[in-house]
Image 1 (spheres, rainbow, N blue to C red):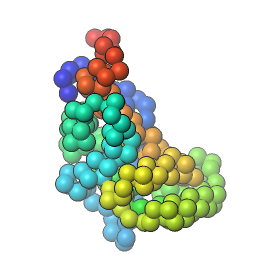
Image 2: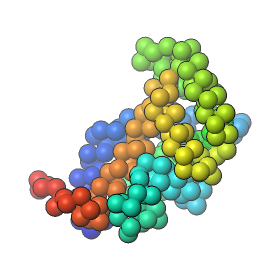
Image 3: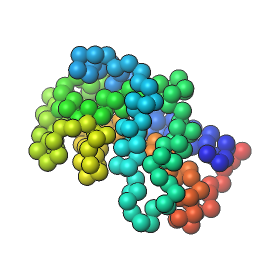
Image 4: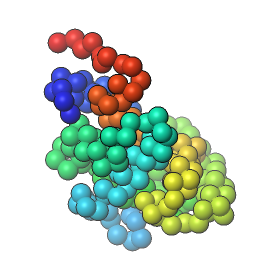
Length: 205
């Protein structure tokens, strides 16, 4: 990140908006057991493939108009500089949520933390479960049930779309938060500014 003021501004805007919802949803995700094992805090080596797959699913990296210098690795670097997922106690639950997100087979399952969250917001958990089973059945028929990070680009984008349409409120919060993480990071780079003719924000100091 070239500008410390911009980094602070981007972080503040994230945590005041989609980030706050993401962090609350990630705390719920930490309570979910994946394949019978409570999700521990993953190492960077474990979650980085998921992060890289998310970046390429959200951004049109394959578009020739997208800056060539903004490779997935460079965008990962920018994101982790803005949002140090390994070291920031506010963000500690995000990497673990990514590992659960990566396991596509868990999408159509009903988990107690999601049910409790749904009820606390006065939403129908039975309808949410039914909706996600139907969504996943269609997805699995088209793309299979492999891990998100190992799927081809079309499947990754389709899976990400599942989360945006999920009946579970927490999953939709995860989707919005992940997307915001990636977009804020990308739009904090000079290369992307230059490609769209943007001179940068006027920050209040």
